[in-house]
Length: 267
Length: 309
Image 1 (cartoon, each protein chain N blue to C red):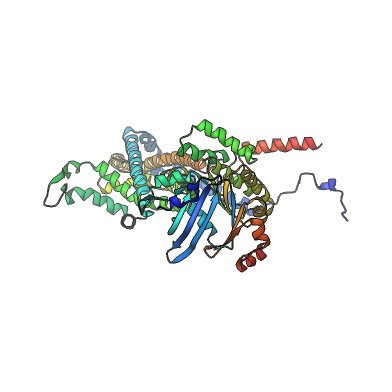
Image 2: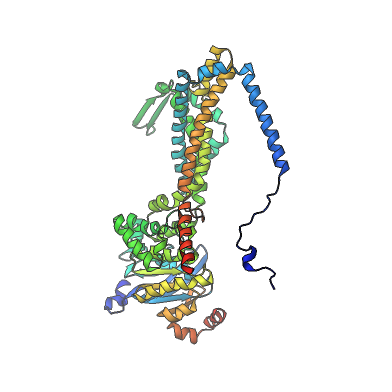
């Protein structure tokens, strides 16, 4: 029996898992950053990933869309093995072309936005759909304007990133990720680089996205957002999941000492 | 308690007496005077033979040599840029052999004088009389006798200048690519772009901002370095022809001025081209709004002001 057969998705339930992580390890040389992460996120759910810096949250997120190659364990997105192809008992490294195809189903938002500075907001959004998916330019532009409207930036289509505030840049970055029409959105501390008064506008966009039923994994320090929006909260420390559960319960009654110590510092 | 009403001075534009700079004015006058004296001296000095200069400036032999110099420059630069990009990519590749070969190439061609290299290229056909490609003690695939190239000094000059240039271009391109934030490549990858798409759409356009100014320098430098091809020896370029004609006029000075004028002419054209290239690749680099955007913002402000009143 392969691992795939043992997945809950085979039992065809309403809540099918979008992301399944089984004992994921990640080593950088001698340094082990992830020491066996096991968790799953169902389609349409929002998971918030919290923990002290250096706990492996961001690394785990980057493993999900194969920006980092995992060292051990198995990682599935929508039932498909990430970064590898399985034939019998052997794993084969995936061709970059196939890895790129997988990544197109996963949107990623970075702490430092990483917008392309030589392109306008609209060009940032349109670039990948036109190049990768071979969509018609006019259709992509129309969709791009629509996305800018959704994130409240219709009037900034022709502005370059350097002319936008941090919050506006991050909202463009979210629109850019959505343009690929992903099944899953990953947010890597999306508000950590923002001035406090700009955090709200980005969280509002994310909340609207969650309300529409997007599956999201959010690495964040915004406990308020986690409490109100997330379906589950995972506390990570030192490369392992320490505690996971309903955000309200975990935040109100953390069972582990490490969780309590961390929450007492951030809350 | 404030002693002035807010409308007293606050909204009036400042009309202050400008600070005088007597030192600046005096030094400017001295320099202008010296420049005037030099120009007067040059115009009246018979050694310059301005009449000869005028007669030869548009001489067909000179203009043809100028075109050849331009061709040498462009062709050598094309080799330099193409090979330079290749060397830079090799240098950044994960493959250790490619990295080392690229490093060694740059080390050699940057570390020896271009004049010496050109002399060497002039002798290449006596060093290598035939080029054979095949399996040792086995079949031959290619056999070329280099004697057919021996007289083609133009192409030897192009190759010599181009290979030397590629070493410098490799470093310029490498610096440009390294200057682009790693997050840019990562964001492109996360959007499902391939290495090629990420490089050509995202990384290189940003690297260009760093690559173009020194490349413009290299191009202008190359235009002048072509005067060294006499080492090959190739003698159809601008400087060589000007020297040949100086034998005819018995005075090298006006011919040097003729050659310099042509070099300056081409350099000026290249500078204009560089200005537009820099502007194109500099888009998005500045927070400052363009004049068009400023106008739109000012119009919006005016509308808001009216609405408030």
